[in-house]
Structures are given as C-alpha cells and as structure tokens.
Image 1 (tube, one colour):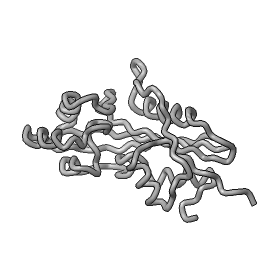
Image 2 (cartoon, rainbow, N blue to C red; image 1 turned 90 degrees about the vertical axis):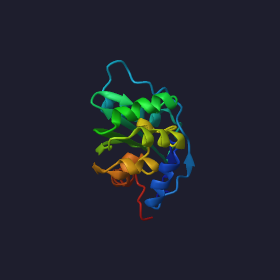
Image 3 (spheres, one colour; image 1 turned 135 degrees about the vertical axis):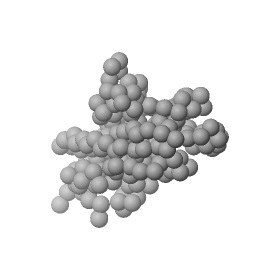
Length: 193
C-alpha cells in the first residue's frame, strides 16, 4: 500500500485554510506562490483566473508524492477584472462600481499530483445593494477591503451589503469546498480520512 500523498497548499490565505479545515484537512505544508498576477492585455476574467491559478500551481516546487492545491479568486464586472485594490481610493472606486448591481466572482482551483493536473472554475453571481455614502465611508474605515479581490470579503462586514448570491458561497470566500473535495479525492486525498 502506498503512502498517503502529502497536501501542499499554495496559498497564504487564512480563509483557504479555514475552508480546508471544514473538509477535515490540514495541509502538510503551506507554500505560497510568488507570481505576477497582472492581467494580460485584453484578457477576460475567467481565462485570467484560470491562468493565474495554474501559474501558481506550477511555480511551487513539488516533491514526488506531494499534491499541490492552488486557487485564485477574481471579481468581474462585465469584462473588467477587479483585483485587490492598491489603496483606499481604488477600493472606493471598486465599491462604487459594484454598488447596486450584480457581478461575478470567479474562483479557479488547481490540483497537481504525480499523474496529472486537474482544474475547476466556479462562477458565482453576487448582487451588492446600493451603498450610501455613509455605508461606503464606514466600510472603507474598517480596512476589511485590504487584500480582497473587488475590495470586499463576503464573510466580513461587507456581508451586510449582499442581499443574494447564485452559486457557491465558499467559492466567493476563496475556495469552493465541493469542487475542491472532488479534485483532491481524484488525487488520492479523501476528505473523510
């Protein structure tokens, strides 16, 4: 009987660690990938998200028997990609764009093992309520937008601005647990072990 594969999480995200814990999994190692996440000229949100996820996975040194899991989450308004805001002014601009309308949150997941590379993209539609100036200012003051695609996290204070979603809540958080469990199972890592 072969040894159980070692799980390597290619992300420093505490949310992804929490979501893996929901599956009863704790990575054997955490190795965030350091890659350039700048969108290519004319690149659309879903292909962008998938490319970045695969580049992260391929950038991580992997020993035989290790399974590398990476993910990337992108907020998209039409063809426009809203990444992590550089500063409060950009966060303000992103939130004004999202205010009162629907947008898509795309999370791509990649799992690489000795035999193959498996990927899955999960697209969730999210509606943000119309934000008043007071709500916008108070939210920006929380600084919860820092390091968050689209300048918000659905599991943080911005949850008060999200009346509904259509799709995967955990994908919007940064790791779709259903799809991730299936990809990991195919690589020999069961969630009930």
